[in-house]
Amino acid sequence: MAQLKYMPGFGNECVSEDPRCPGALPEGQNNPQVCPYGLYAEQLSGSAFTCPRSTNKRSWLYRILPSVCHKPFKPMDQGHLTHNWDEAEADPNQLRWKPFEIPRASEKKLDFVSGLHTLCGAGEPKSRNGIAIHIFTCNTSMINRCFYNSDGDFLIVPQQGKLLITTEFGKLLVEPNEICVIQQGMRFSVEVFGETRGYVLEVYGAHFELPDLGPIGANGLANPRDFLVPVAWYEDCQVAGGYTVISKYQSKLFSAQQDFSPFNVVAWHGNYTPYKYNLDNFMVINSVAFDHADPSIFTVLTAKSARPGVALADFVIFPPRWGVANNTFRPPYYHRNCMSEFMGLIKGRYEAKEEGFQPGGGSLHSMMTPHGPDAECFEKASKARLAPERVAEGTMAFMFESSFSLAVTTWGLKTSNCLDKTYYKCWELLKSHFNPSCK
Image (cartoon, rainbow, N blue to C red; front, side, top):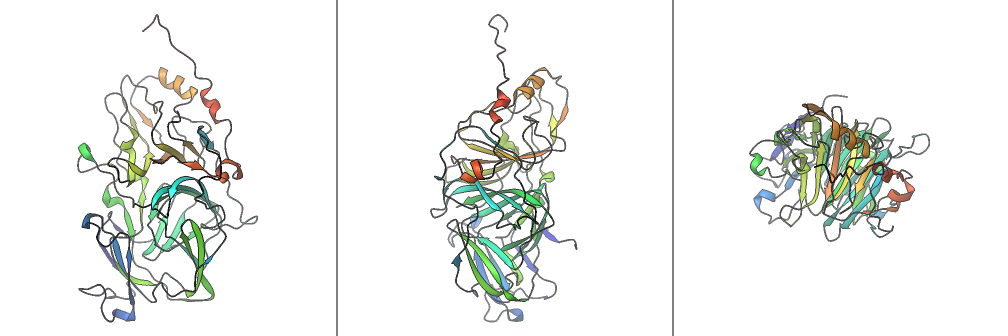
């Protein structure tokens, strides 16, 4: 595979044209009477026209045929995608899932779309307010079909197997320990190279942005220059058997047929693009004296709500770092949260629960549901010699944190057959150390 090229920066105003067609971008205007090379001009809007400049998102695409050239959309099989948050009874318990199973291609072929399974969520795409968390398990590439999400943005976290994602803007190679964001309305297709698994955070009604740094200052956490945007690439091909365009609209799937590839954008410019990020580039902030800073210091991206300081969803990581706090219980503290916390593990062993929480699995600690280190971790950390130490070496855990109270689907609770019903037992061995005679 030839090495792909990218443009660096988060939210930048970018310009790109395929080198096979130099000068494909119109000069000095967006929509000339006749575009270079006989291309069509098409705008993709990611915000209302009248949004302030700081939040206005749009890109102009110059393509061989416009995306309107397709047969009517028709409903298609939903698989395990849903936004019916009432299909299962509410469950406030701590939930943990074993690694989600990937079917073998010889048993059942699944591509990225047919391999999407909704685990939990809340809110409503029609009102543009909510989130969903999906698991994808696939073993087959998308052949002559693409997908776009009319409801919101996809933040994709591959855990096993790399993804070669072709978009209207160009190609992204996304490997485990990297993430990518495909924003609302962008068409893409996913090629895989074996059994592949990962997580998707979907947000309705907001786009992901970098968190404000406040007193941290101008630098730190995920630096803007480390985000990568694809460069223009096109294919001009007719598809004899028909090309399938899949739309996720109001959480339903629809398909339409056309006879050409949608990846026919020869040039583009704008600030509304897909992008990827390598989690190894995160500049970690941590306590260097005593106690914990809250895990918000590990926020990579946030999708803000209308309430200041409250997110629809945050994407948070727990990367390798130094632990040096004195006179401090260093693992994550025991916690009850007004937010919902879904955690996944890309690789390694999470320090608060080294057994049971496995790569490719997950956990959900719902709103105000207590959680924290297991008994083994507590005893070990309470007696440890507090020398400087590396924490989470070789590990990458992450959290999707949301202000919504998340409902778990029937697939998550039953059909997946991955729910660990013994999870609660990891706290049963916690014992009282209280002694009123000894301070």
